[in-house]
Image (tube, rainbow, N blue to C red; front, side, top):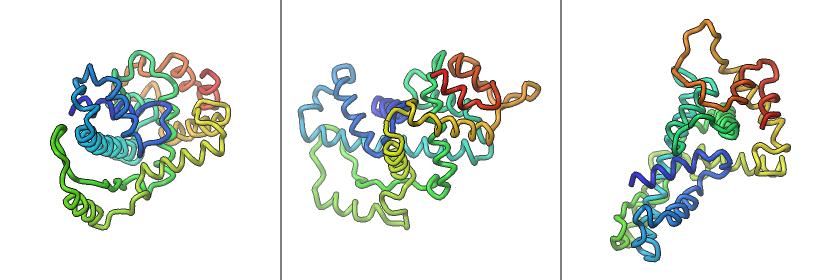
Length: 249
């Protein structure tokens, strides 16, 4: 369902998101809140239909995670790596509901920079897909598949030499954020505890993937309005860009 994927994409791109493998729960809750608009009234309140919907939501979230993982990989080690501002704008266009708008909040840049840094520092995981627990497909409103069939499919879905569950890219990202939240004492990525680390992360990204000189031909047509005016000013400030950027949050 298109509405499910739209919600999943918007959820994964939230500037405050620090857990990705359980995002299906948040997507399900948002679908429930919008059940009237999305015409899902007949689903919620019916256990078998809710179970079928959850199966679809989980698969959609897995697909969306895989899509963002591939974009992160291509953005830092593909044939045409992207500078941070370009990647943030492009990914907001693809994942964020409503796109980047006229002034993308700095929180999205920080969030993207953290994901790019983790991907660079953990190259062995960036190409690794997650293992799905269940490959069954059920239509919403249909009867659940027999338990024996589910067990058989689940038992064979981990074959092919794929990495063990929990060792994939997004599971490792979840662990990274869990550790950093404990270390910095806050889930607020724009808070004081995170400031030094996020400043360093942005400076590092801009050093590895510098902005284009005014005399050079731009790599892509990224509108100037893709980030807020304060963000743009600080991205062009040079030197201690990351620190200046964070002071304006």
